[in-house]
Length: 191
Image 1 (cartoon, one colour):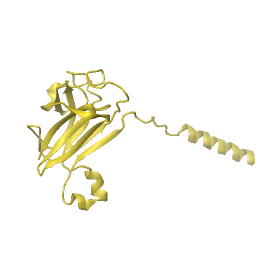
Image 2 (image 1 turned 30 degrees about the horizontal axis):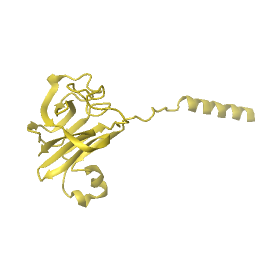
Image 3 (image 1 turned 90 degrees about the vertical axis):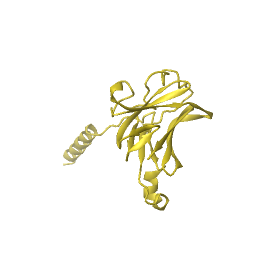
């Protein structure tokens, strides 16, 4: 009887091991989100008085690669003059909860991929209707919804991790900031 119990116990463990879920390792470029109003999802749960009756207006989901001592812009990572996914992995997705103005372009509420064509002095920021694309390898200019050109600003210190942030400019305008290494670009988003 003990041998039969031991046999079934070992058989159970072998079957459980065969069906065990295996997970990929951690990605080198973790995903993050930026909201406007800033930190909206957190404050909605933990500081509701801070947001009052405000509603989310914009959310950007993106990957945050690290510099790790590498040259970033004008290299294979983010080549000048070519469409770049703005970050790593999938192209970031920007969601406008209501109609907005991105730079000087009117945008309907909805979800868009955020891409860029960086150069040393300016970036062309692109909103594309082509969602769920890895990198910019399948980029199709015919699916552009808007293009806005903005000047490059130089940061005084190195920003190790690629970052996107939305901050309040005034009652109707947020500033979308994209930074990495010593490069910063900004674009107004109005509602």
